[in-house]
View 1 (tube, rainbow, N blue to C red):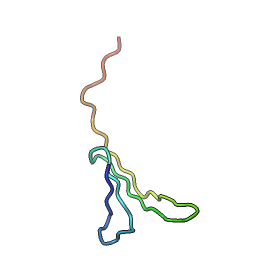
View 2 (spheres, one colour):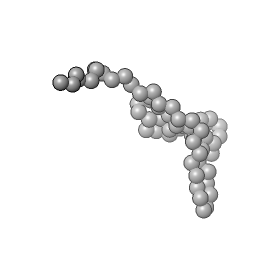
View 3 (spheres, one colour):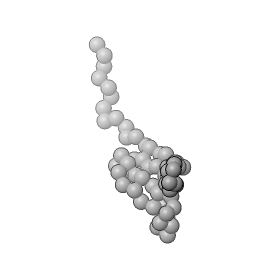
Length: 59
């Protein structure tokens, strides 16, 4: 996983967290508060890979 800014010109703006070898991402913003910090998620995307083989037949 790694995190990068959505726009490089806004260092405190939204971020994108990439995961699963670039098959998915989460776009979020971190809201700093002394009492209750929050992570606001705007978008979650994951494109799972197809299975390499069909499941074995049941006997």
